[in-house]
Length: 242
Image (cartoon, rainbow, N blue to C red; front, top):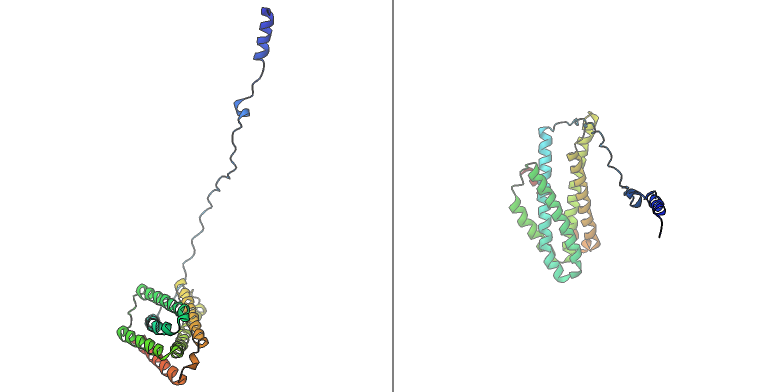
């Protein structure tokens, strides 16, 4: 049996052992997530743009642009709607092409419907007449055959491409005059020019498709396209004003 002195010495040795701290046994997790950056000071406000107010004649011109463009795109969608069933009955492989061209025209119409509503421009009063004529043109050329239908597209898009080019030139002329006078060009105006360029390019794409699909084999090509182009020019002139 151990002596009391030995037991006391053993107890002192045990109490002298240093146990690790809880924090050393289970180290505290150190987050590696960076602290959020301190907020940067707000940017100074941009100076207001120096925009030149539109003259009355410029307002009328822009209104006529939107009015005639909306009417033209409505007519285009109706032409393709009327052409598609007769063409696909004989040329089913043209379904993707007809759908592609119709979808683009429908998008153009949505664009001008939105702009007409946004700027409170009066649509043409001849909507009913253009609707009947466009539907009749589409159906009659499709019944004549694929070549005549494509010649119709060739004629229409030739006139429409030139029509959009003329509008873009007028708008760019306004921009040049404003910049020469030290005025800024508003984003909305710049966006309108970009939109017209995109739509023009898509219309000319339709022209290329029509030529690739035998538009110029329609008989008599010169007469058919000449009559349609003259009709388009007349419709454009009237829709700009009525």
